[in-house]
Image 1 (cartoon, helix red, strand yellow):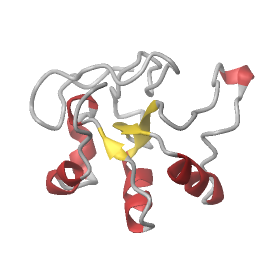
Image 2 (cartoon, helix red, strand yellow; image 1 turned 180 degrees about the horizontal axis):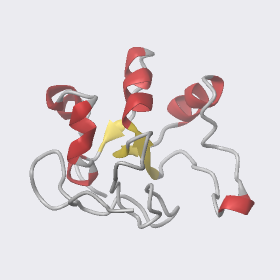
Image 3 (cartoon, helix red, strand yellow; image 1 turned 90 degrees about the horizontal axis):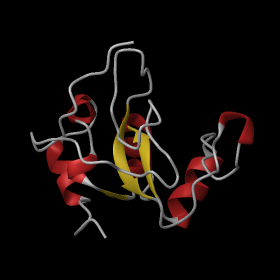
Length: 126
């Protein structure tokens, strides 16, 4: 499986999103992607309780741990590589989480316009 170039939506190098919990389609801490990543796990988000509950209600349970897949569950305040279509769904439902642009892969732009992501940009990376 060949990984796409690690380039963010701003055209620079893709900055890691999270290693605690370990995120990304490749579980490398980055929102890297490839043609095998059907869900396009490319948007680095700052998870909120409201967002996580909304995702769970719509069938994308990010809260419940799945130890058999080494998935600890996502907690409010953590960063996570989210599917671009799920972010867009959260936006339409009024619960879109903040986005870390430098950690969001450029392929997210195939689904979400940059102007929209910029409106939800996290202020910093702390």
